[in-house]
Structures are given as structure tokens and as C-alpha cells.
Image 1 (cartoon, rainbow, N blue to C red):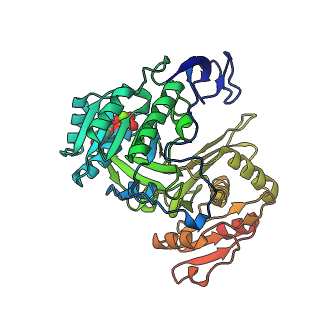
Image 2 (image 1 turned 90 degrees about the horizontal axis):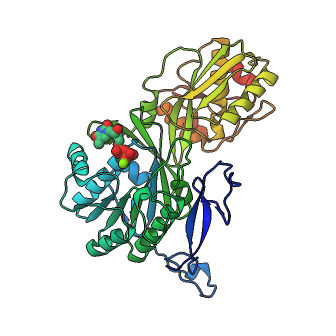
Image 3 (image 1 turned 135 degrees about the vertical axis):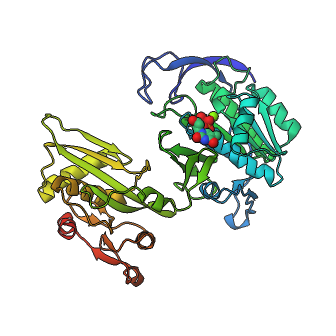
Length: 452
Ligand code: TYD
Ligand code: MG
């Protein structure tokens, strides 16, 4: 590689600047620029693509669906969109200690036991530490090779020499290339190491998993700048204090995004949770104000989550609004709507919203659940424990339609709920069955009338 000029790179977001800056114009971080050698821009484009062709009709382009390797862990196969695609690059991000290495080792064990040669490259732990962990989770297989290495050049050499079916790099932040002068873990190094590993994997059709650490605020150099380079991005949600771990596909070129896999951390590694709704609702309090269940849709799968709200009066001039698992701004908006439209004056109350189980639900369909939970807590009136609510709330207090109502209602019925308060939409007839009465509500007022 030609070494030509240096530049200053933001260690948070990868923004490049020819001179040093105190504040990053892209991510607004302070004091985060480090000088790095900028690699000569390569010929451009991606390794697996050929350039310089002529336009051709889309019907004549040959289909090259890569072969998929099934990991045998159902939850992982699903978030990957049906197994590991040949030559794909997958980024697995998460906070330190959440279980990335454990999960990868379990996946590799399964692949190795299925007769594939897999190479697990670690720059974080010694071989004996990996061995210890593997005997704990029962991951010993002849085809599972372990290499402790941090130098990019030697890693590539070793992959060439062993030609494995799958490669894992644990973690991408420890890999460094001697071609760059910046420190391991800096944006420059992470970007360089990943792009060369991905290039190599595409050329040789070897799938590669890159493990990347992300801190709570998602800042530390690395994963964020890699997202556009890889085919699939998986993130661990929840925190290591909880027993369960949720893996979400943020981006997937080979399957639906936003799909989640649920695991529980046990003494023998991560165990799949095949029925997450029951799992998330297991500890739900009965007949307590401020709790309601919402059938949320995560990827293609409906999952029931419990939304809890605590509304308590405060003497502070600026009441607190805390939201865990749902969008903070959304909560503020819903508080205002409740206040203005329904006359519930929440201005003098602290409000805390929590989604039990550590899941994050981003979709607007949970709006009605948030409103119902807040109203229930404020009025101190419990919501019937066999009722689910779902719908988006508009600024005028109207309840708006949401997608895929049937699957959600079906999942709720399966778990023993018998009443659903939903927006008015064209429902197919079979949703309101003997065990489930579906009630349409058009406005928040109607919701409150039906609930209390
Ligand atoms: P680890 O995979 O090392 O996390 P990461 O690679 O994301 O940093 O896993 C970390 C935690 O998991 C560690 O705190 C111990 C716990 N753990 C278990 O509870 N059971 C197990 O069987 C294993 C292997 C780990
Ligand atoms: Mg690790």
C-alpha cells in the first residue's frame, strides 16, 4: 500500500478532516480526533463486483444465491435470514461481557460438529482461556481450530494456509495492520483490517464473522463505521445484568432486518428461548396499575411485551420523564396528547416507562400501550390482565392503523389473552374468534372508556 498523506480522523464516527479539530462536525464529539495515515483510495468499489460492463435486462442476470450453512441454533439461523451465506461478512456487536465470544464459540462448535472446518481467531483471550470456556459450554470438536493472533498480515496468511469454511475474528478492535501507524482499535485500523478481511472473504467465498465491542453510547471506534461495509449487522441488546440476551439484525442483505433471536445466559452458555412472549410475560404482576401487554412485531415475528408505567406526583419544577425500551420523544408526545385530549394532567408527575424484559420496541404500534399504561398508573386503576392493546396514536388523539394486525392478535390469543383493543382497520373475519374479542377504538377517549 502506498503511504502518502495523513489526516485527522474522528475516533467516534470516522469523520475525516485534513486538520485537527476540537469538535467533530459530524457527531459533535469533543476532542476525538487522532492523526492517522490515510490509505490511498483503492481502485474503488467492492471486491465481489466486476465493473466496466454494459447494461443488461434484469431478467438475464444469472441468480447466484450463495449456499447457506445452517448453524443448528434456530434463533441465529433466523436472524441471519436462514443460515450463514457463503462469502458473507457479518458484524456481531455488543457491550463487553454480553456474550459475543460465547455465542460465536457455540455457533462454531455446531458447524465443526457438522463436519465443517472453522477457524476462531482471538486477540482477546489466550488459547487456554478459550479452552476453558469451550469445555464449559461443551464446545470441543476436532474441526474447531483456535488461533491467537492480532496481526492482520499473519491472520490473512493463516486463513490462506488453513482454508476454513468459516472464520471468526474476536474482536476486530484488536486486529492491527503494520501498514498503518495508528494504534490498534482506532478507526483507521478497524476500517483497514475489516476491509481487507472482507475483501479476502469475498474473493475466497469464506464467510467471516467480525466481533466488535460497542459501549453503552455506541461510541467507541469501530462497529459504527463498519456497518456499511458488511452484509449483515447483528447487535446484542439488553444488558449483561439480565439473564436474557436479545440479538437483533439491524441490517441484512440476505434476509429480513429487525429479526430478533432470544437467548438466556446459563452456566452452560447461551440457551435459546423458543417462546419469547411467554418468557417476557413470565413475571408480569397481576391486577396492578400501570402494566399492559402489547403484541409488538419484531422482524417477522410477533412478540408480546409488557409495558410498565409509573406516574408519581412530584414537587420538582421539572418533572422527570424516563423511558427504557421505548423512544423518549415518543413518550413526551404521548404525555402531551393525554394531557390535552383526555384531560389527564400529568404535568405535575414524574413519569417512568419501562419495557419489561429489556427488549427495545421502536414501532409506533406500541403507542397505545404506552398511553394505556400511563393512564392506568395515573388513575391507579389496573387494566384487565387478559387484555392487549395496540395502535399508533396521532396528535389529535386519534388511534391509527398498524400493519399485520392478524398475526399479532393470533399470538395474543395463543397466549391466553381474550380481548384486544385495536384501531379500526380492515380486519379479516377470522381474528375475532370464540376466545378473542376484538374491539376497535378510534380515539384515546374510547380507549379509556373501554379500559376503565
Ligand atoms: P463473553 O462471551 O466473554 O462476552 P463478550 O465476548 O461479549 O465480552 O461472556 C461473558 C459473560 O458470560 C461472562 O460474564 C460470563 C458469562 N458466562 C456465563 O454466564 N455462562 C457461560 O457458560 C459462559 C461461557 C459465560
Ligand atoms: Mg469476548
